[in-house]
Length: 118
Image 1 (cartoon, rainbow, N blue to C red):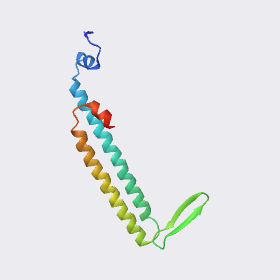
Image 2: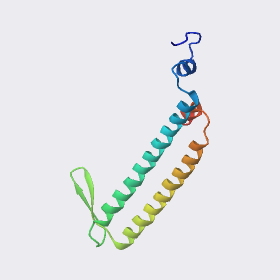
Image 3: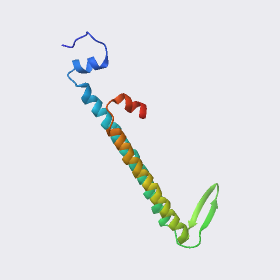
Image 4: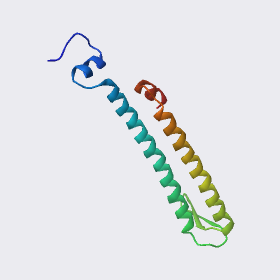
C-alpha cells in the first residue's frame, strides 16, 4: 500500500519501490544517448556533403543558375582539396564536442543540472 505522508515526486517513486538515484542515473544516460545521436547526425551530414562534392566532375569550377537555384556543375582539384580540409576541420570540431560533452555529462550527479545544461 502506498503511503500518502508526502506529496513530493521522490516520495512517490520511493513508495512505488523505485530508487530515485537509479532514476537520476537513467535520466543522465538518456542525455548521453541524445548527445551521441546529435553528434552522429552532424558527422553523417559531413560525410554526405563530402561525398556529394566528390561525385562532381573534375574540371574548372562551374556554377549554374536554374530558376532560383544555384547549382555547382563541376569542381576544380584545388577546391575539392579545400572541401576535404574543411570536412576534416568540421569532423575535428564535432569529435571534440563529442568528447567534451560526454565528459561533462558523465560527471553529472543530478538530473536537475542536466535540465539546466540542455
